[in-house]
Amino acid sequence: MATEVEARSEAPGGAPSEQGRGWWALVLGAAVAGVTFTGIQIVEKTAILTDPTTSLLCDVNSVMSCSGVLNAWQSSVLGPPNALVGAVMFSILASAGLGGVLGARPSRAYLAVLWGLAVFFLSFASWFMQQTAFAIGYLCLWCTGIVTAVVLICAALTRLADRAGAFGSGGFGRGVGVLVRSGTDLIVWAGWWLAIAALLVIGLST
Image 1: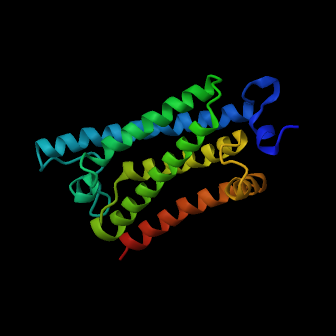
Image 2 (image 1 turned 90 degrees about the horizontal axis):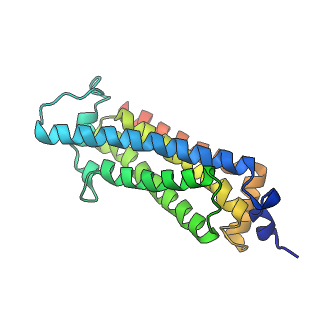
């Protein structure tokens, strides 16, 4: 008899369900948006490096200023510009999303790694937004889009990984399963996004 984990990993007819394809479509759409946002940032970072006095499109006022953010050391904390690292991450997620939409059935291990990558990405983005609010003192319009895209990807991958049994049958897997079946997982991700928004409001208004 199949275990609960095995049962969740199987779709009718041995193919991904329409609901599963929907979550993959969300991963793909959010990742493509993320690639777009990071691509714009790469172009803007190049423009600033070429001419530090360049005024960027999203330099709106004393609070919303992409150049103010991109000139901060935090925007290249890993060495290369964060936007370049983000573009690579989003490309990986977009390729996975495209495969899912086309009907691919990734392994449980792959889904678990993909979910962990997305959560790490969101954790890093959350740190950067905290720095944006309380240390840098400027808000980058594209950064808010990037964070929103990563939150959506995390929410979708949580559903997909749970459906495939990628979290295993241990305590963590069972706990995530309970959250997914009750819909609380979506509340958790929405709360994460709201917490970041609250940090920005508090930090940039002081």
